[in-house]
Image 1: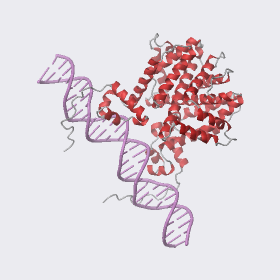
Image 2: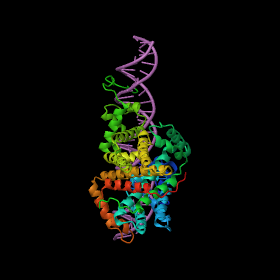
Image 3: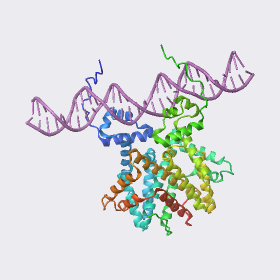
Image 4: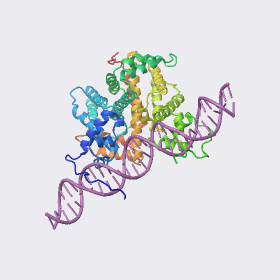
Length: 233
Length: 233
DNA sequence: GAGCTTATGGAACATCATTCCATAAGTATG
DNA sequence: CATACTTATGGAATGATGTTCCATAAGCTC
């Protein structure tokens, strides 16, 4: 008795062998189609016409795979973004490129929160830093300026992704979703929540991308201002 | 045959009945002790001396539970934070209170990225908004100012949490972790990554909390600047 | 006490990431 | 060409998870 193991027809090495790159691309496709929960080793192996075990030859584990997928997209985004304007404009362009990537791949923002920083991310830091230098930002401000910009970029990305996925998970489109929240806000107690109430209308009509760019503008203005910041250097 | 169901000694209603609040507190304790992955319905039911099924009477599902845990902590943080300074100072205090909460509960930042916005979060928005009004920020800027601050606060929280958890997951303390990255940065190609290299030393010695406060200062300065921003209202 | 509601907790279920392993195709070596 | 060794492969098993189901019992209302 015992396990007969594999029947005869078994495996015979596949014509076009698997590759790490192939697996990453399939993972991205799966994530794009079905969201964060759509990526399972079973679904992935089915799509690639193999078994889950084979994937582990090319990929260490799921975290490794997701990290690689993030790197791939950030790298692609960086490669496709060229900078031709003023430093401030260029930083905005970089931020918007990341925003668009996270918008096109709604799982990306959330995944980046869990994934360790890898080399494509460093490339983004470097490019932003280069623009800061061109702007003539004082060296003492470099660290704070760069980290504030990055935290903002990925903070927005993460939250936008979360909102989008929440709406999608409840089977409603963005407009419905915003409409519901906006209505709820406008019905809040005027004494307790005057500010939130006053934002209800704006919520309904706002444009995430424009607001993102405006927020970058706010930070850039803070960076450019001549006031020196408290530093701990 | 078939299932004999429960033996006789069975259940007899527990002396102190379960409550949603009790479950939430136990969940927070579990998350604090063992991180994001430490919260399972099995561990939770064991700690509460019951079965997983009983928890579902008080809590809809895991998402509901995590959202409730987040709300509990944000609510507590808001309740414990009183504002007595200038509007700018107050906004900084609010941000730092959230930073400290996310620092004390490293899973919080990450969980907030997935959880839908609930009423304690609205309370935070309201308080920040009130300070913006006191500062005399133009109405047209309210939306951008508030959302930029919030995105920054939770963006930093999320990233800090991710870094901390990554370090912890690899069994290294913060100093080790930063040391490794700092060294890696300082060994990058000087032609390709001059900026990142120049930040290596700063990375080693930086203080997350001070940098967070400085970033808030940057944004507040941008908000206070008299230049009007492009709005889409 | 009868009947209904509120809990309770253990077992069962489906699904997941991951490991294991028998196996076969490639590749180098003689 | 034959023999070893490496590189892949893919299916089966493992263990843990969130969730559902259900028999049961305690409280409550009449």
